[in-house]
Structures are given as C-alpha cells and as structure tokens.
Length: 111
Image (cartoon, rainbow, N blue to C red; front, side, top):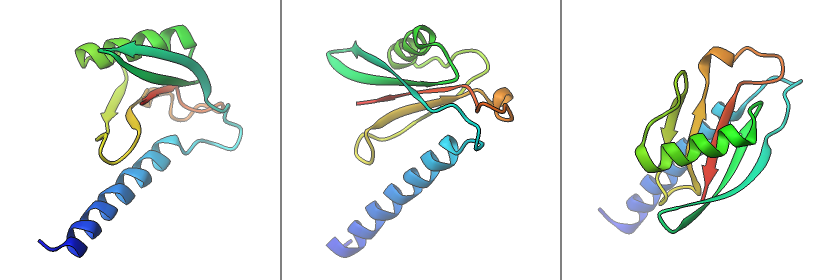
C-alpha cells in the first residue's frame, strides 16, 4: 500500500469517527449544552470529563469505572474511539432519554 492510499484510508477513518461523534452529539434545538466536570486520573493518564443532562459526580464516577473496568452503566451504550484518530476516548449515551426536550443523558472522556 503506497503513502497516498494509506493517507486516504486514515482520512476516511477519521471522517467516519467525526461523523459518528457529530451524530451522537446532535441534540434538539432546546438542548442543554455539555458541562465540563473537571479531570480525573486513571492509570497515570489525565482525562477531561463532560456531561450532558447528568450530574458531574455521576459522570466522573461512571467514567472512572468505564476506563478501569470497561463496564458501562446500566442502560447506557458506550462507544470507544481509537487514540490514533481522535482525542475522545469514549462516549456513553442513554438511548431511553434520546427524545428528551433538554437532550439525551450522556457523558464522555477526552485525553
């Protein structure tokens, strides 16, 4: 595989991840914006936590559990992302809250 085709594969993968993240975060017009919940340290790495329509204490606690044990909270669907493509490490959404007027309950971690 030559350099140009490898570059186009990487660009295509990055575009797919970006489109997925945009689709996940697309919320209704009256949605409440994400709240920055500070940083946590897991295995000597710092992660910035953000929450949508969710308390920061829960988002931080659930993020720590997901990063250390790989377990998603009950009722949440979590998607991991490659650190080679994006700074976002994972996004967790609660599908049962997708139609809420203030937006779905979700949280994510960024390295």
